[in-house]
Length: 212
Image (cartoon, rainbow, N blue to C red):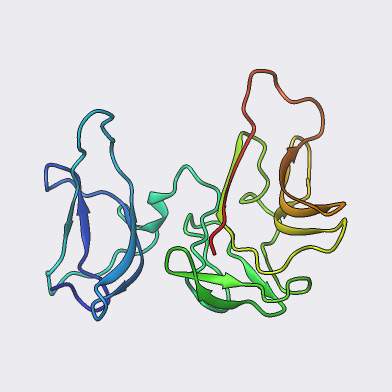
């Protein structure tokens, strides 16, 4: 059996020897449920890719976030990854970048995967990160989020889901919001920058998921 903390868990490639970086977001032996992400060395397009999860070494200790096979190295191609599993307080950026702090009251709630964050009435309740390299994006940009709408925006107003104002030369400003346009509800997203966008380039792809 795995240890109650999951400290003995390891992930290997198909040779059953070569380890790969992984993040254990949550783990419970009592419910036999958890959330784990790992860095695949490659994924086949026409056949099954095999990876192995090992556990049961009583002397094993958990990797730290910055270890070779630790959390941060799962997300090297990302600026920010927030699982929102903390339930309260600071929300950790799994890339090792800027964490999110709480303004007002943000509670934990059941999410699409594991735990999520509930802004309750919104407005003065939100999560925020200090300006810096995590959010100051000057290259291509993609955002993705699971979102559950709890209250509707008033007529001709919007509810911000994700957003950042530009803070310097060539930095992108980006936003995802829920908008009421004369009674018609719109999920809107966009990205902008100072100067011209390069032609024949994709700058923004935003994915939205809503569940009841």
